Image (cartoon, rainbow, N blue to C red):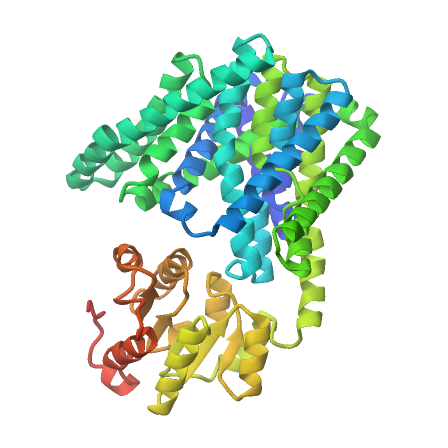
Length: 547
């Protein structure tokens, strides 16, 4: 019990400090674990006492990954973007594998190292994009597509580690075994999701007991992990498979919400045990190799991705930004390296050196992004204002309509409503578009509406109606859900690219949805006039319209 209390104290303290320093909680967990571990202060000497919690953390990390890989998300991007994503993964993995082989690793170990280090950190990249207000820009969409392809590759890499272990490190045999098991896993996912998972979740949902539904979600994760372990595969692969099975059901969001707090807590324990397992003496002895590995990884990944992006026809600035944002290592590298180390594919000193190097790359990225963000705001001009500026500029607006997304549709809706004498305030994430619109006297402000602090700074809660005019169904769903969470009684009207996404937007909280067509802007404006109520009229009706 005392060790658990110590771990929790370190968990809270290091996470809080590193989050405050904007270095990310992952780095805080790693350093906190190293500080209290056997080779640090020695407060925790028996790693087995926290090993079970750490293992569960990895299980829920992989389950969440599978849960995010919904098929329709993979349809959001074009062939050129996926071509770049696949090329990045293969070329980077091959380059790193060759270097690892020259450094003395076996062929199987070199391939695992190449695959593990080719991945980028989804958590770090998404946080950086949010901080820069670039999540829904072209940079954000391409970066997210690359991350999706990398996430898909985690499953095969997990299979490959297990297959190489059972094949005694024989590369050809291991790869053939991995392919066979991958095909088997896909079949199991498809059949189980179709004939078992959805009916079970539907039955449990009808019970209308939150605790029973949450317990069912936990059972799915743990049972799938146990089944794959018994089949000679890994716990992690089973959790990944469970996430894939649930991802295409209508219960995906509820399950993600139920396991969110548990997943975050257990994942923190996992990163702390990674830190505890680091031999501080070995790390100090190989400090030069660690720094060289971290710098080399950032430079290699950044330069390769920049060159590949230019080769696929992307602009020079976007190519450089992609290389900078995605150059770090991934949280999944810790999982793959630890798994490969436990099977003997990679020597323990190499695992420790690479793990610390990956942690350094993850720590450096937010710092560089913060500096880069300030420079970007200076280059792009006053449109990329601070939240305090946005607060000051919009604080006096009342009884108005907020338009989120100022593309062609958003601009046309705004002009129509202004022509009717309705006050409008628009938010957009493209600095150039905002500057040009402001130059023409349009009430447009820079801000990423997928961030709660931006919505609060823009005083969205003082509006009568919000129109979400984003072209992306996923982006629209995220913004609608956030607005509904922050402002339960606010009317929300949203556009959606196709009928398939309409129900999801309504489920996220939209009161009305307009499907894209030839007259999208006019349809949105007409529906907005129907939903809009001046303050004096709305005072008589506290309810939320359902049309």
